[in-house]
Every structure is written in structure tokens, then in C-alpha cells.
Image (cartoon, rainbow, N blue to C red):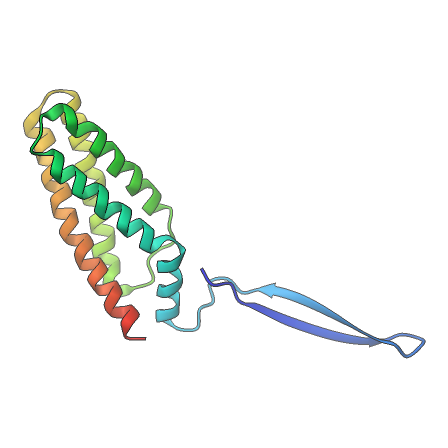
Length: 155
């Protein structure tokens, strides 16, 4: 996140005619001048790394679906951890991408929870349904990233 600082200076004359300047810094966080700058701030303040982590872990979930069900839980738990981190980010400032971003997080979270619960109970249909939700989330994440990149390039 870019932090802008406005310096206010005041001068006062003392009895000996010495001029003293006092500077006060006022942080103006969250005051990006354009939507593109706000998105750039979000992207560089964790959005980019969160997208990469979600993409990597959702890919692992997809990959383990071809292995025995005992291998599914760690991958799904890792995805849930990445979703929790992504939810701590500020709201994505791209109106274009916000819906896809939110939907991908929802699909990852619900699908990851179903995967963990189903695998824990040896309920393969439930766990598989969770993985299918995660796979839908991958598509929504890709759409969000495409729109984010387009917004960043249009600045």
C-alpha cells in the first residue's frame, strides 16, 4: 500500500528573530488519487502474492483428486489457510474483478471445507463434490485476475 504524507509547515518568530519551522506529517493512507492506483496498491500490498498462493494451492487440490482420498485433506487444508489469508486483505478496489474474486474465495472455502470433511469421514462423494467446487473457483480466480490485469494496464 502506498502511504502518502502531507507536510504542513508553520513558522514562528522568537524574540531573537530566529525563525523556527515545524513540520507535521499527516499520513493519508488509502487516499490513492485514482482507482487504478488504489488497485495497484492492493495488488502490491498482498493481492499479487495471495493470487499466486490461491492458484498454487487450488492446483494442488485438483492434482490430489487423482490420488487416494487420504492425500486430499492436507491439500484442502492448505487451501483453506490461503483463503483465510486472502480474506484479511482489504476489499479489492476493482469493481470489475470484485465479484469474481469474492466468488472464487467462497467456492474455495466451501469446497475446501467439504473436501476436508468428506475425506475425514471417508465420504468420497462429499469430498469429490468439494474438489469440484474448488475447480469452479479456479475459473473464477482466473477471471478475476484477467480483469485485474486489464484494470492495471488501462491506467
